[in-house]
Length: 158
Image 1 (cartoon, rainbow, N blue to C red):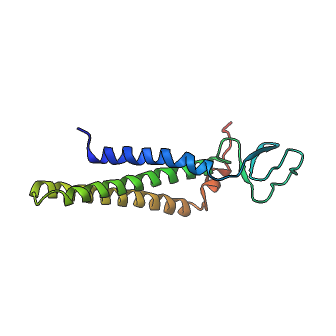
Image 2: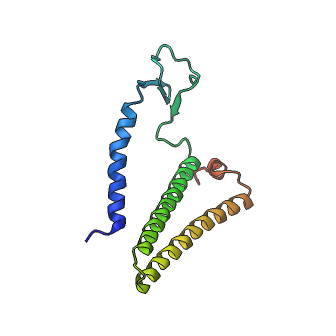
Image 3: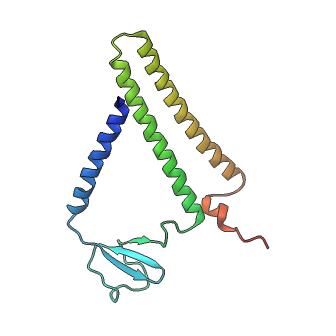
């Protein structure tokens, strides 16, 4: 039997898959891809290769080769994604536990199970937030301002 949170996740996925292409197609603007050296520019204007100077045109999005310009920004992006996913999972767990509590019908066992899920979700969110805070405190304590500073002076050991 499929559990409620699996049904909700499937419905949310289907909704996103239906809405995302229609929003992208309804934007009405065409994207022009312009190369300039090692950088790739996405332009909503009808810019061509000859019309683009060496500087980035204003209002355009610059895509670096591989999505991350440095190792520090890659780690920052991955950690941000992990925290975002964990927060969404906690939110989903809270919703399903609240629904389970509401539909328990006064059954002591189901109410205790829902309460346990809520407590576990909140504890998980506190652990994720605390680990992020400890990481930032250690980073600042060691004298680094950002992830880029952490990896700026890396070189091969010879």
